[in-house]
Length: 594
Image 1 (spheres, rainbow, N blue to C red):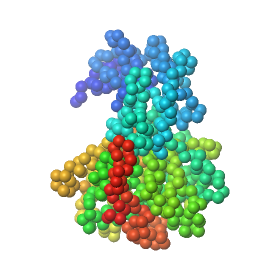
Image 2 (image 1 turned 60 degrees about the vertical axis):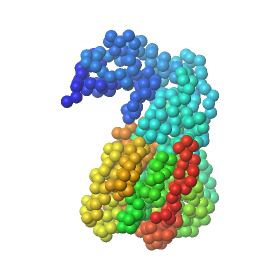
Image 3 (image 1 turned 90 degrees about the horizontal axis):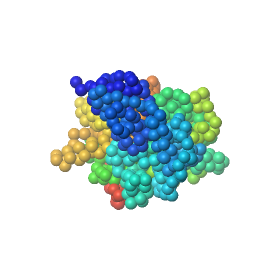
Image 4 (image 1 turned 180 degrees about the vertical axis):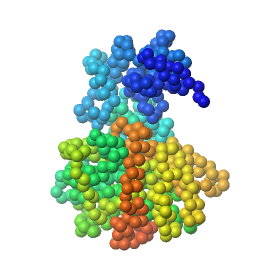
């Protein structure tokens, strides 16, 4: 049994495990202590000092986020002195902050804005000392505004400790301290993998997605353009929380209706190409197993993970599936298959995707993503950008009648839906790989061993006597741990115990993507994932190989999974990248190398 201690906070007594912070003990008592740099999913940085409290017999206030309790400790969270201290700290932060709330991407979601409003601070008490560093727009995915940075350190913690990318850190000292990249070259010239977790954890809007909303509106309002949209599986379970509904509520029908009302000409669904990805990836896995190809096969649908692999593990590229992500498969087909079926000039098509992910913006602009003869995906919007478009259009999303996706590439199965949760790609692939090997469907489609929020999950799958060990990792730090293990096994024995590995760059999978609504916690990401599994369990068809639209696609256009045409349109190649600048060094795979 862990040692427990008695604690008194604001006259209330509680027994908690020794080592519990004052902040966590106060939460258990329902006592609110204001915070700014603190986030429940990250190690406390104790940067801001907003959470100060008085501790009996201590000559100075203590920071509640990082001060552990001890036996008999007596804490006071409110006093005239503490109120004045906290207000002064917020006023000092605001004196070095570019206060442009009405035009800020975080307006209404900004934790500094909330604190200032709640405390009734004096904006003009201290002289303004905002620096003159310019907006960093070197990245196609993430913009960094130094004038809004409060040096809380959250972005550094998630980038370095959770994702182990180390693209940003503190530079300078004292009042000059700020967050920046190596040699101040900008995010686009750093090791940044575009995952956007920094934007998800930033409390002020100093880090945000590079917006493409204006380009999309221009296309929608251009009568010469045919604007086609796809939406990732995770979008349907994150929109709800932005419109007064519960996190994890599935809003797929409302999502379609909103897109139609905004003015998109054709509304399809990325779940369709998620099912298609399973057909290609499942075929690739079965071929490797039967032909003795390089194993483990590692999934390729997370662009943050792919860039991380190219940067830190290019020696593992031969194990990574050559399949494009569902976004990019869809983009290629919009300007080939869809254009052909509807007799539309592909040069008039604008292909838009709505993604939970900032890395998708980078992926869409990779030079190899032009197999249609055009840029396959023209614009990528995050969930946050889509929400802004809904609000600009004055749509009452919560009360919107249900709509439907268009035919041809709007059909999907439960397997396509669960792509949005960590372990979902693995589960969908297992369901169809079993069929591809045996010709029969699994009797129990719920592969629960790969579900849940454990950082690294392992399971053994029995496909008609063929036993395959599989692993799932989410969050790039966990991917690094798993791949180092695989690398060591191969180095020692020439092989590894795993046959198939799923990796997602973001904690929780796509439901926790860097473009999802602000205020996300790991617990909320888990609820979104549960929403996807609920939709899957209630669907009549839960197997990718039974998607009638995908079957029609192969019959009319692609031929068969893994065919020459499939490879030319739906598969890709990878590069080795510099760990300093992220720039390409050399090609390490070719789409036909398998």
